[in-house]
Every structure is written in C-alpha cells, then in structure tokens.
Length: 229
View 1 (cartoon, rainbow, N blue to C red):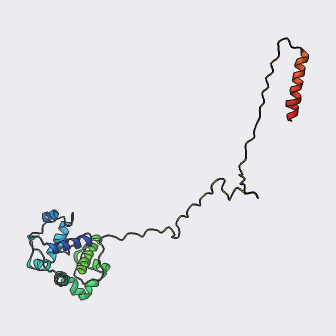
View 2 (view 1 turned 90 degrees about the vertical axis):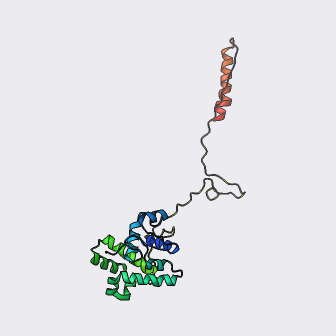
View 3 (view 1 turned 135 degrees about the horizontal axis):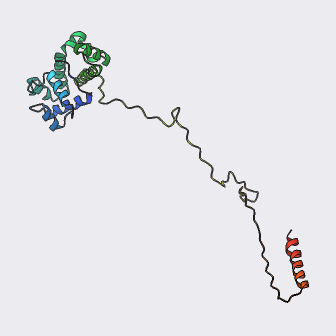
C-alpha cells in the first residue's frame, strides 16, 4: 500500500482530535460525513487510519485503534501513536532511524516520490501527512500549519508607502491674511470693479421755450457730468 496523504495537516489534526473524544464503531465515508469530519477529504483520513492499522479492511476499529483513542493522557496517546507510526512507516525508519522524525519536508518528499512514484504534489502531501503524525506523536517540535502563512500587512511607515497628502490651507486663513497694527485682518481678495449709473428724468411742459431746455441741460452737464469727472 502506498503511503497515504491528506491535502493539509489541519484536516488530519482535526479528525484525530475528534476521534480522541469518540471513536466511531465504523469509520467509513458516510459516518465521517454525518460527523462533519474532513468534509470532501473523507477517503484521505480513512486511508491514513488503515495505513496505521487503526481500522481494518471493513473500516472497523482494530484493537490498536481502540487502545489508541481510549488513551486519556497526552503522554499515553503520544507513545501509542509513536509505535503505530514507526511500524507503518518502517521503510522510512529503516533508512533514517530516529532522524526520520525531524526530516525536512524536501527530504521526505524525495523519499515518498522514489518509494511510490508520486508526483510532486502528492509527494508533498505525503510529507505533510507524516509530519502531522510526528507532531501529534510528540516527536516533532514544530507543528505543521493548516494553511499557508499570510503575507504581512504593510505598515503605513514602511519604505515605499505613499506619502500622505498635505492639507491645503483654508482660504482667508490668518497665515495668508496679514493683520495690521490695530488688530484688523485684511483679506487679499480682489474686489470687482463697481459701476454707478445715474438716471435723470426731466419733465418740462410742452410749451417750454428753447432757452429753458438749454438751461436745464447746461445745469445737468455742469453738476452731474463735469462735476463727477
């Protein structure tokens, strides 16, 4: 049987943690769907359990499986799972001995690809599955992340960040409009030109003489037109 795999370590971690609470009497795809364990990846989890000898060909828990998931303390659980992993991955431990627990992901991928003829994608998933089991056994220091790390958010003060726009000064602010010695503020706004129109209405009788007309217009010219210039 080829080495099993799941897409991510989080799927296997979640499934095993739930099995430690209650291990079903039959671990098949239908049961896992009802329990909401590993949605869409039920077969991957089932294959891991079979590979470790925790369930048989009928998906029924073996004695090793019942003993493992009935372990209450983390130490007892880790010791039992360590024995299962070492037995099931005997070819890897025959090659690397105890160093297999701390093997890098690249080293594990190379091993699984050569052993099973796996593709690069499957080989990586096989490596992640083993690393997850090693972590659950307490034999590996670092935990396998369930998802890829997010790129850090850029700080507003980081190099290359867009500078903040300068605030425009308000119109007629004290910085722009000077204050005279008496404390009055003078605005710099330009006043528009002012035009003045004077309308004169003269009512004369119809029988007025020419001299009367001349006198009135002469007075208008003298007092309004010439006097305003």
